[in-house]
Length: 262
Image (cartoon, rainbow, N blue to C red):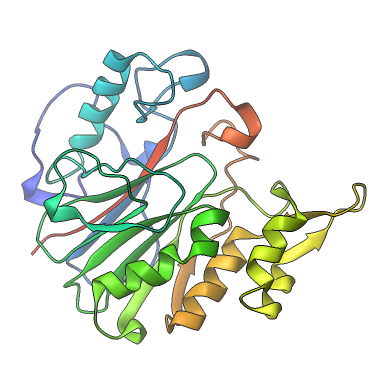
């Protein structure tokens, strides 16, 4: 597999990732927009980080992470512009990133600049304009969603949100994401209708199961984005394919990446 086309940096190197080890979003993005999401397969890490851990701050062997990132780069036109994610709403232009800044989303209108976010239960949201001129990636846990990371990312991209397409990547599913009333309150304080994305626990008082996919769709819709795809892949329930912090605590990180080719 070579989503980067003829721009791939590293041809013929050993241990490149295969299509079976990656997720390619199924969405009607314009031809110049490319995107992939890694799984936990295809890497050099061992133990709880087996095997394609891309996170340097997860406690894994740095040499293994470096090898994993090298394998990822065989699928890309350039190294990803990594972020130091803090569950906030800061958005940066990916084409200005050298050292990872504290941010949870990145956008660009430059060719072959790879926007990236790392995930291990939080939902990645990939965005592009329908002409392929601008792309973005946002890291959306509940804190980021509640504080407006999607809205800020759309604002940074500029233009009319009605011209934006979105894809929701793997995340903790609604059957696994038990939260307290404070999480529910943070959303319904903004829109009472967001209560529909929470189901009360049948066994624990004042606990709720949150649907990140539905909350993301609702945020996108209110911002003007009607074309939303993806959603539904649960990281917690598929340990063979996905890392999950909620499930394992000691675990690796996957990545969601998007770029434009021309």
